[in-house]
Image 1 (cartoon, rainbow, N blue to C red):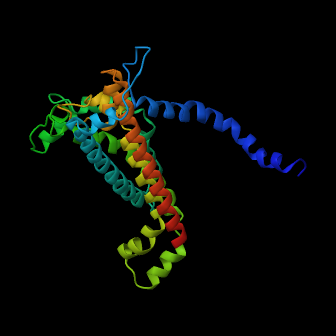
Image 2 (image 1 turned 90 degrees about the vertical axis):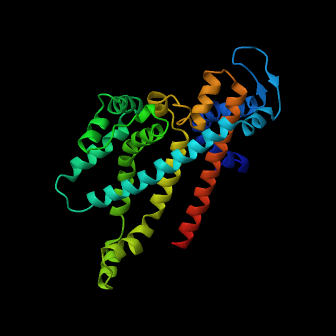
Image 3 (image 1 turned 120 degrees about the vertical axis):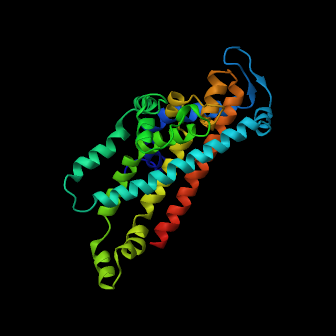
Length: 293
C-alpha cells in the first residue's frame, strides 16, 4: 500500500467514522452527561446546577424505596428471563420436528414480538379487567376465584410478567430453532447407536451444543428486563403500592414526575453499571465456552 505508515494505520479509522460519530453524539455524549448530572442537584428547569458530590448516591443507599425497587427489579428479571428461555426452548423442540403446519405455528407464536409493547399492554389491560376481563372469566370456568390482577399488590407483578413472557417467548423460540437446526445429526446418530435415549441425547449432545445461544438469550433478556418500561407504564404505573416499580421506572418518576434530575441520573448510572457487568460476564463466559469447544 502506498503512503506513509501512519496514514495506513489511520485508514481503518476513517472507514469507522460514519458509525463512530453518531455513536459519540447520540450515545456516548448523553451517557457522560448523565454521569455528570448524577453529582448535581437540578430540577430540569433552573439554569443553575448545584454540585452535591455523592449525596445522590448516598440518598439512594439510605432510601428504602430504592431497595424495594431493586428487589422488584431482581424478581422481574428472574421471573421473566427463566420462563422465556425455558418456554422458548420447549416450543422450539416441539416445532423443530415433523409437525404439520409448523410454519403457521411459528408465525403465530413469533407475532407478539413484532407487535408494539404499548399495543400489547393495552390489550392485556382489557384481559386483566377485574369485572369483565377474559382472565377472570377463564378463572371462573375453572372454578377458581377472581383475582384483582393489576389492582392487587400481590398479583400486579405477576400480571406484568405474564405480558412480558407472552411477548418474548417467540423471539427466544426463533433463536433456538436456528440453534437446533445447526446441531450435527451425526453426533445425535452416534449417541443413538451408543444406546442413549431421547432425553439423554438432549442433555448430553443437544443442550451443550446450543449453550452459546442460551447464554446469549440469558444476558440479552436480563438487559431487556432491566430496561422494561412500556408494559409497566401502561398496566400499573409502578403500582399498586410500588409493587411493580422497577429501577427504570423509579428513574422515570424521579426525572419526569419529581424533576429530580440528579437522583434520576444516579439511578440510571447504576443501571448502566449493571448492564456493563453483564456484558463483561458474557464476554468472559463465551470465551471460555469457545476455548472449551
